[in-house]
Amino acid sequence: MFLHSSNTELIIKYLERRLYFHGDLMVKIGLIYKQLTPRDIKVLNSIERGMKKYEYVPLELIEKYSKLPETHIVLILSKLHRLKLVKRKTIAGYKSFRLTYLGLDMLALNMLVRMNVVEAIGDKLAVGKESEIFCALAPGGKRIAVKFMRIGRTSFHMTRRVREWADNPRLDWYKQAKIAAEREYKATKEIYREGGSVPSPIAYNRHAVVTEFIEGIELYRKPEIRDPYAVLVKILDTIRIAYTKVGIVHGDLSEYNVLVDLMKNRPYIIDWPQYVYKDHPQSEELLRRDIEYIIRFFRKQYMVEIDTVKALKYVRGEDEQIE
Ligand SMILES: Nc1ncnc2c1ncn2[C@@H]1O[C@H](COP(=O)(O)OP(=O)(O)OP(=O)(O)O)[C@@H](O)[C@H]1O
Ligand SMILES: [Mg+2]
Image 1: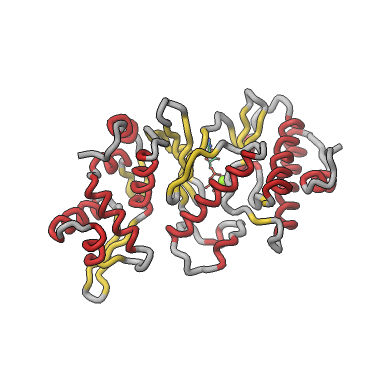
Image 2: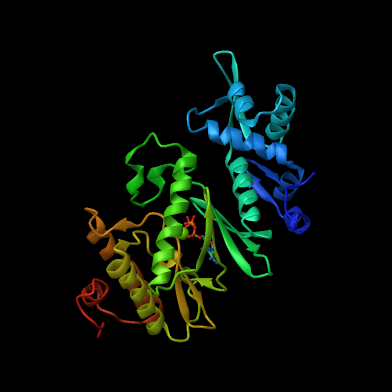
């Protein structure tokens, strides 16, 4: 039995060829996905529900939520454990379970398939500090990108991001990852609606965000850009829209978070979950830093000169033109 989807076969075909890194082990994401029955998903869902209350969810609660007989659940749980979708621990004599990121991936993927957003998932495009990005296909064959957040896997100290929602250090890893996905989706949706240049957001579920796939190259690779000045201005335009129309500052802008479509001579600003609102105490400092990084990069790599002070005035909406 496979998941309920008319497209399951296609998904499996794609998934099976792909490799998925999980901890030290390299396992095939497709092999995992294809082995999951609706009952397995039900048990995963029950664990997820229990994790609202517990770090590790007692077996009894999984039974209660899934309404499956204990003998079945025990078998299913040992299978899910073998597939590395759950972790187990005995707490005060009670067998208890929690999802792993891979387990959460399966729930998000399952939902995105049922939402008719994803039809097939393919190559892993990138493993970031805080996410893994896959190329996928939407029904109809359009290429899309699926970003699974992996917050909490890396120590906060290793990133220079400001996280408004991280005020509560007790927030669990998967809650942080879900908040990050929701933030990224909602921020890019508003910026996109206002005409900013970001990948068009399609949907999100749990810790996964789906956007249009950009046929582009990362700016840090220093691609040969036809008109670098126009690309820089377009980046500043998007920062201006985010600031003046949406009221947010990216906060982690650099050549690593810009994709350039060389055919269209068009940049896309990606990676928004750490944005801060205008009224955040650090917003002005972050805005200045974002702009300085990007301007410096264009000056060094493309000999394009734009004055930082003028650029700041422009993105704040104080000037109508840069020069
Ligand atoms: N919509 C997209 N279309 C095509 N490629 C994408 C898309 N979104 C992300 N990527 C690829 O994935 C990489 C990482 O994306 P992103 O910056 O959003 O994640 P991240 O977790 O912040 O990674 P890092 O920590 O390395 O910055 C990008 O550099 C790009 O190569
Ligand atoms: Mg990034």
